Image 1 (tube, rainbow, N blue to C red):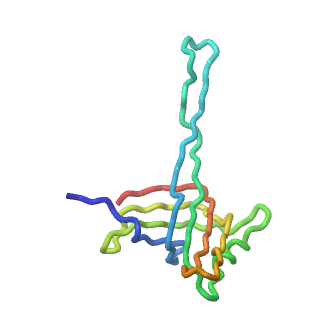
Image 2: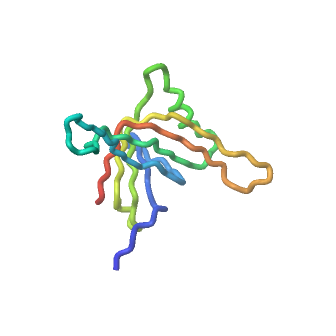
Image 3: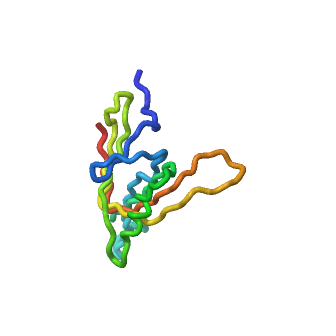
Length: 142
């Protein structure tokens, strides 16, 4: 009997460098719907056709480490109409570290960085959140 894959073993690569994250979300693709109705059409409903594809922003979360400013440095490459874009590869891995599913993200750039919620009575790890926009997502099921 086969079981579904767990979600806790994954890797994220950009530019050949592997970066560790505790959470990745927003791996979605949506096809917008175009509705059209010709006035001479005897049917009283609109035709529906597939339109442009829309890609949601991807959210990456990881623990904060002393001296690690990589997210902020990447966000600071943003100027008027220019930004450093990166391709990302996100892989869901099995117990032998072999990819089961791969998401390839094209031309990603940072749009939001969020620091941790600081709490003097808390006992959690400090987590930073990076939200990225991109121009394409392809999925390959190994």
